Length: 400
Ligand SMILES: [Fe+2]
Ligand SMILES: [Fe+2]
Image (cartoon, rainbow, N blue to C red; front, side, top):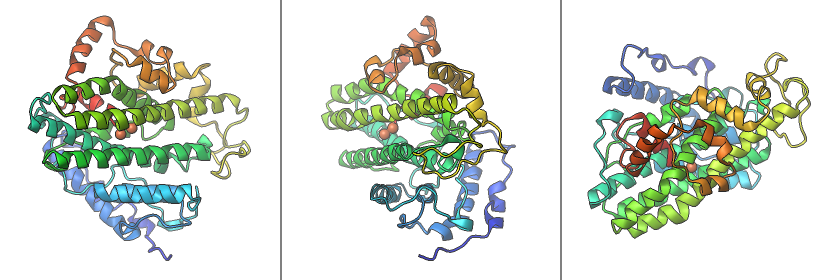
């Protein structure tokens, strides 16, 4: 296939560099201008992807970028399924040479205008599920969150998959391709459920605060794994049972079963992936006797030669080596990259199934007095998802 080339000089379209620092973050003006800048950037690469599905022979990272540059949520699903099929059939490589055609990982994934975006604090309350309108709003928020979760899954592959200092084996990519497919399925099932309830995706406003959290860990795979998968997704495990109860008690057994039988079970595996690969990186840091940039490629490393940063130990590896256990490294990562503390009560059983015990999260838990408040808030967690507070943001991301 002949792929249209792209001039490197266009990799940062001038419009994408709009200076927006004079606008308060999350203000309406900020959102509008940032949205415009992003759209200009995506238009600059439209000729590269043309929203086409992955092609045999290209790299998984390139295929991941296709999803991130695709603006339509439903089409993101189609591209995801196609990419997963090709990957499992062995028809995508880890690192094909795309030369000048390789665009950068977008700071924000492409989004069309299906959903009206507003400031988090201007979101209307979702209610507690006592009325059909409230349940529609709750499901709509979940549909929106799952859509972002799809992008988050591809972002981890596109952003970190080419960094050879992590020496990521094929199993890492297998895991996150599966996570991407799961999130797609969640989005599609919940979207169908929303339509069966007489509504549709785009019927309610939403915000994009979820992605801010992702961008706070855009520079570091360990930070991403710790915060997104072992904090936010673990929080989702904590609140999911009460969310399911909320639908069930209000007579919406279909939504309750969907969340219980599909979403909840699969979210445990997503959390497990975060724990597994953070542990892998910690083990790698402690078993590699020379800087990653100087070491030989491991047998399982399909990423090719390890070429680090001028022969020095990568920063993440130096940090990991300061911790004799992955748990204390996790504590430092969370304290550095996540604002706030972890709020009990914890879903100990689900967290155990995901592979991490209290020694991971209890040292980061809120003090008893604050915890009591958090417990009260937890009851209202889903309703608060789009209310704009920091807790709401965390809760919203947690349910992906
Ligand atoms: Fe999900
Ligand atoms: Fe998830």
